[in-house]
Length: 242
Image 1 (cartoon, rainbow, N blue to C red):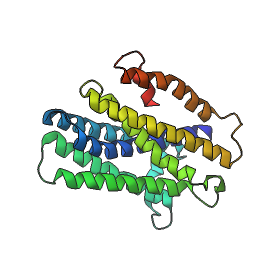
Image 2: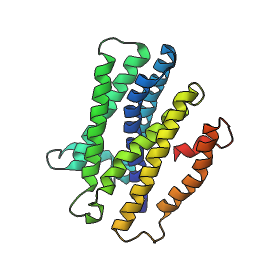
Image 3: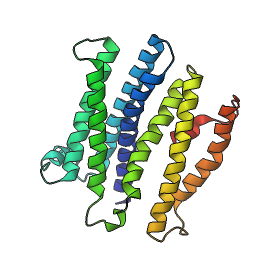
């Protein structure tokens, strides 16, 4: 059963990362001071990355199915099942991201880019909402706390900020710094939210690997942020992929 949980976690994280990347891509397109060619190129790469993340996540999702060949049955109960709605929303989001990439990559003028951008963001937000509802069930009262859905909102934005930082750190240092600071703020909120969730269950002092990951990331990350602010390339930025 453990292997099914691992693949489910990977699927969830990759999907959230894709949604966060699409949302912050929209921010990047509007605040970037780079050349038009550079902005278009980065915008197209982010669409491709979001698509790859989604497809990879879907492949991992098959790992927690006892019979992957019957995966199509997952959308047979959209009227009553939040999971079926989640899978359907994932497919719609995947299609919109792929269509956006094709249109941007080949300069097709059939559909205005702004319309696809809005559709991608809305479908991504709906997907995150369905993911939250999939887990917040009466049979899982331990998840019935505001910090749980908040984690599903913070994680996409954290991942999106990290990926956009990696895309812009060499070509647009000023823009990269903004995404790194955004990452820092969101990461702190996420850490506090995690502590609140543990406190709610009275498990603050228990050994939790996730808590250790947060602490280790903070210890490694803070020098990285300081190095960036001081324009020194001292610490590796691989930490952002956490």
